[in-house]
Image 1 (cartoon, rainbow, N blue to C red):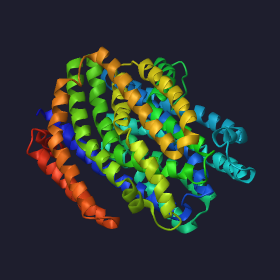
Image 2: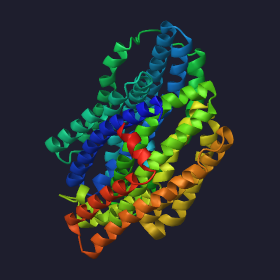
Image 3: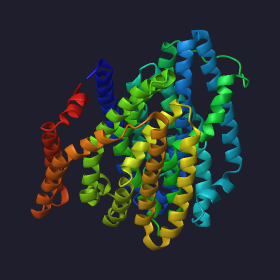
Image 4: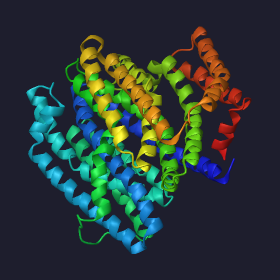
Length: 499
């Protein structure tokens, strides 16, 4: 194992640990929210309105960061520090101006925007939705600045800081819930303030890297103009899952009260758990990937992707097994308390399992898209995403009335898998084969630890280990999975993660 791979393994573990801690706080935030709101109409409202800053605005920020990382890498390698600083300060100034204008327009036309995203609510709830929309619209500015700043820190190797910025945000929201309970308006204000805080936390490190942000706005800068041209393709290509979740919640407003909230809780748990590993891996490999693409080194790109997918498969396959067998128990463990009843658990567990079936598609969205962006092939994920969004709307129209929450969530999983197949096939044409016989052999090697894991779970079911007792077979099956895998050639993955 070369030094670069060892360093990636160590950094991946560190970033995963920090993200895991922040996600634990995210769990706590969702748990406290669920205990106060349950699956009520107010929970439906917040989950729907929050999906815009939570998903759409975050996708915009991610897109900006995805374009900026290769561009900033180019400036660092080929230009002076002054030119680097001028490029970045100009980018921050333009984002601030454009986002502020869009926020003001959105506040003025909030009633029309709210009727578009929340069509199924009554008039009294719609008035509250308009107010909440206006409160949370400024997060467009704060989210955009936050993600671009995080990308800059990643280029300079500050992975741990960029991964930890949500920790104060979660603490702030949890504190607000305990102090104000089910005050939805206060929660909206606190959420918006929390996004601003995530940006401000990064500013001292940006100054430490000698970046300065005072300067004139230059809309004629070639790099920033190219960035905006690339933004829409990246936004469409990189936010398929997020847009599917927004579509799901919109359709859910026509279903029984609590469906939107259940979709929100189920998808939040799915994204929270899996992104600990998927996003951590994408964050760690992207700067190296950008450099390999700049060098035109397709062999190293293929080798890097093989290692990435072996590691993710080793982690995500047991996750999927546990969700299939223990979806209801996991939801009850995380959420069921206070206003979150047994009925809330039942419908949320369906959403959680449905979304989890698309976990490999979610991984492919995060990893494949990073390769395309580093290669400057923005149109490929964009076209695949547009096709899949049309497919998604068609599936929801076909399934939501008959199959309800499970139909909506499984349609998203299916769309993500279709996207993975399309983008993976097209990427193979760009850089050559990278998921061939070697990966198939790896999957065959995983059969023995997977069978051992399932055997323990089935034994626990036979022994009647229900309720909190399910944690025993869950833990033992996980330990046995790792232990058996260590006795196979898969141990190279385990050793790589330890280093």
